[in-house]
Length: 567
Ligand code: HC1
Ligand code: SF4
Image (tube, rainbow, N blue to C red):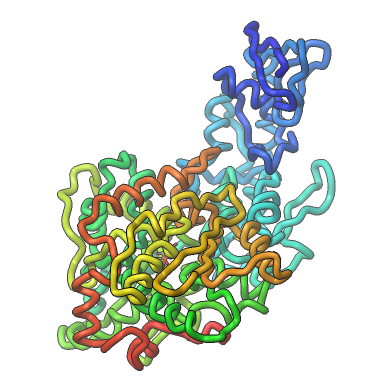
């Protein structure tokens, strides 16, 4: 341990701690823009300056706390130096705050206000051209060169999309090798967006398309919400976790004008029936191990771009929201058409890659594209604010039927390990005819911190080796271990975003705060409190099979619910 004096008080911290970490221990706030714990401690924004006796002004994020050091964060000189550095950043930032999608969550705007800055670089030149159709958007004129995107994409997500050229004031962040973004190996996880302090990186905005559909009298709008949305949507509209219930979410979706409000959770139960049955068949086959889950489009894009040798081992099941879209388009179109309308399916997702997934041509049936448009939770929050929905005053309503009832197994899809746990609950039933104990399948120890978790389970006469990973750097480590033979599994769940969809790149942004585990807690509580906790016990799923699909893996199931992942 070392002891320093910070603002006149003795603070004891572990050896190797930075001054920023020492300040956190002492409860002293030091502003930061570029800092990301353990990932980006480069002192480039110079907003975290502190005054160290004998050394002068130093960046707190990359200066070690040494025994006997005396430092101050609270002098007018420190404030003036931080302010001057912020002004230099602001002068080079095209500050179009009035129309900026990050106006409420911009770390630069927040500090500009705190440090009483009154001039900004509105008159700077427009940004470099960008592919307007790509789900990840970049405005180079708002980039403050903090390098957070470079660190996250490289060290956490293994994609290395971002790079930089030049030094000092002429330094610029660029797409690696100046490639067009569509060719740069981006998995579309959106993690660079949620870790960007400004609006230099955003998701493509599709709100106007959705408003047009809602206002068109010849269109019947059908909306669905992903499992992880119910854990986070309230953050963007000022609702506590207790107030932001699934019932209030369904009411909010009706309030913005959607005609039918369904739940992706219903289709997560359907996915378990299909993928669970596929896995039981797979266990009895001599196909190469493991089978991988396929519901996360960031992971599917990543494996196709970076580890194509594993593509054939993806489950053929479409992701739940695509399945729900296919069921809607194939079962409700005739009724809509009799009323002179066509169906338009919108998915509200915690994810940026779903915007790409819904446009993949093979994710469609003869009826139509499964899903017409995807909104992130941030866009949904903007839609709620635009329509003026008073979310706190909404009366809770159930999702519409018949595609609105779901089980706790479906709800935990939204956190790392949840798809595996839900699949095991039902695969065990399919093999033994009995429901397993929940503790047998428990995966709540899967976290973004561990590269992967694994188990060996006995199901009937079979031994099943499973693994779960989230975050693409963790995923790369697992794939490398599988390739070298260092690890061997039968069934593997991968989620591209750290912590799973609860930490998704389309979730509300909270600067310097990782909320995935808090949100996972919400999903775990909803699962524990649900009267239905096994996908195969969802009565509306049984009815859907009886009325339309026959049985899992039937011809219709293949037509509607599966795809050829190698296309
Ligand atoms: Fe996910 Fe999924 S869980 S991919 O993480 O399989 O986005 O929530 O909707 O489709 O159900 C995301 C979440 C989501 C699908 C489901
Ligand atoms: Fe990298 Fe993900 Fe951002 Fe793409 S979306 S550039 S993979 S962090």
